[in-house]
Amino acid sequence: MSLALLCSGQGLQHARMFAMTGAVPAAAPLFERATALLGRDPRALVQTTTSDALHGNRTGQILCTLQALAAKAALGNALPQRRIVAGYSVGEIAAWNLAGVFDAPTTLDLVAKRAEAMDAVSAPGDDSCSCADFRATSLTQCAASTARRSR
Image 1 (cartoon, rainbow, N blue to C red):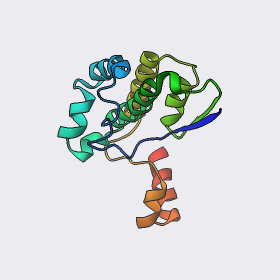
Image 2 (cartoon, rainbow, N blue to C red):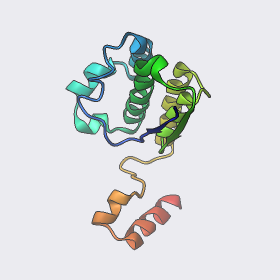
Image 3 (tube, one colour):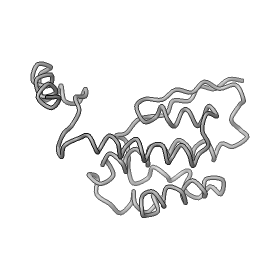
């Protein structure tokens, strides 16, 4: 059997995102590593913090990557050797773990460093152009905003 797995990018963080994986013994080391990176247990964090905090770049990237890695841990030996993995945005890095490129601690550390690097080059309130922008702003306005930021 073959299986295709898609690892999402940021955006769908929510209070119950670890409901199926939070108590899985095989995922415990992942939650411990994420706790060290976030300063709080992610299972509690998603239930007690604001939506804005959950969607902050660094926090969001770590949470979404952790979700994919915890699902992999929960599936364990049920995952077939023949699998196709893909990811979108930060999900690409989670997909690398599912493909066996990086171990889980390295994957979480890499995602944290990636988010920190992204934050270091972004000004406060500096949002990238995305499909969501097009609902409120024309493509021309979005392009002009991007051009101003790159000067």
